[in-house]
Length: 157
Image (cartoon, rainbow, N blue to C red):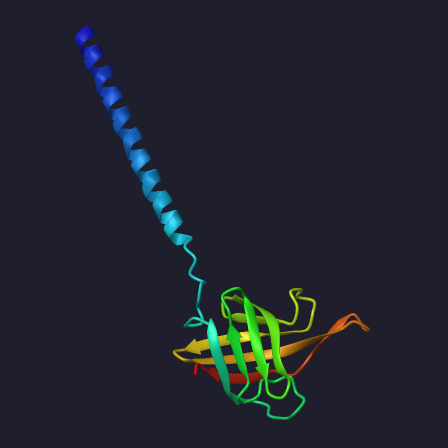
């Protein structure tokens, strides 16, 4: 009788050990799936790397005095999130840039409350399309003044 109790006790301990092992393996597999599912897929959904020099090759508004980029003007996106915009007739101006998904922000200063360009980009090889508005901060009215929507196409030289 005592031998039978020992066998049952040993059998129960073996079953419990197997169950613990199975639970541990399942938890490891679940954790592995969780980390894989949380990978950052939004690094560059625009289709390419924005860093480097881009030359405006086409624009939706060619009227002088608008906030649209004009053909021949350039943007150089540096790795430190500083962009140098070379305006025709006005020289170079430094902007802080930020890319969130396919949303591109070009800010005249480091504060988002300063005047800035905001829009979306699509990069296809050496071509970039930027659809944007210029947001002008009206400090006298404490409000934003948005321009109409512009679309400019850029190419890498």
